[in-house]
Length: 249
Length: 249
Image (cartoon, rainbow over all chains, first blue to last red; front, side):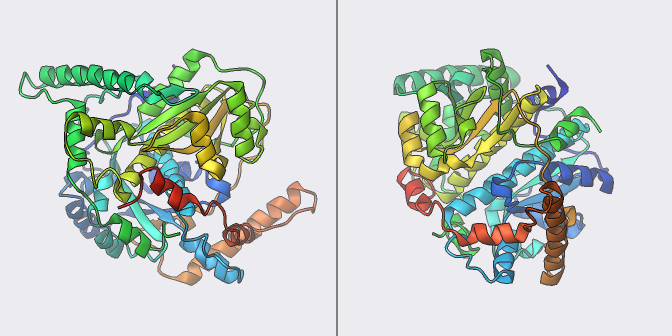
């Protein structure tokens, strides 16, 4: 196993960091790593906002559901889908940008571009001995996040990434069995195969929780998921995204 | 610079592969690498379809706009947003899955999950001396792709990734200047700063093309983008995605 695959397989989300800021040179390497990712048709439809300001970090931590590590870390990045520069470009070239700019397709492109970039930054950080965690909690209240970061129309904050020197080493979280996620030539057609795999996975996860908590906890993955799906969350998203000029057409 | 960052910065899309298939063990390492990526709330809302069947690969290559490397490679992966198993789970637990399952928020989660996984697989491949290229062209005709891969409702093919032994070494594509993509504490508020950066980048890219093509080509990045934005493409996407049960609420 080479060191890249080792870094990838060794991933765990870090939610407690030492009180030590990243150097500007480290931040630069992470952003350059992000930028090296593939981008659809060379469109580069994303931007990254690094937050150093302590007041802003604290505000973002509160908005993300009081996640302290959004404020207390080595650096905090916000990855955004970004078609703002493309709208400017169309104006400069006096060419139409509609309906393409506001299409669902270009929204997908921007989300995918931003996410490829983010994963490069996270792996680069991990390779430097740093830890990282994605913060989807920013999507709890995106209008507030947008106000704090002063993002214009056609810029949509998607998630944060907190990076820093790890002050914990959590267990790795066991993923779904490979054959459940990976299909060959066509998607698994037999629902029962799928359900049996889920039951096996539940047994596995349940035993893991039981052991780790000395019998206090033995919930299953499907139980967690059924709960998650039954609780409406961030239902404002569709309207918000459209207001920002994405995903409309 | 460590070997992870070296691999990341050395990325270039490979569009010509040797006639040599990946071994099953290699495919397994790539899928395990994909699965090791972060996933929002442990939801694991994606699946991966590996295509070995030659007829299917040829069909997909045609659908992607006659990109020969979709058929001719070491292995072809299709990354899908997937909430199918979550819908099954809600049924099994007799809990409601609506409106959450069909929400724009969960669609974002699924696209982001799938994309994080894909980028891990691509970097793992590159670290093994393989090359890769993302195939957004699958989105030209997603209903046909879905028919070939027999994906059910709540599964949305997002893009392909062709992997194989590289038979070319293209130049790296120069990205936007770092300070254009990376903002600190707030998004750049001065439109003119942004426009000046774009002009500098245009000069740079134009000189690059001029030099590479012996004066045959000197187009700019903003020119390419203004053209791209002026041509409606994949405008069926909004309706298609909603039909598949995503991004509706």
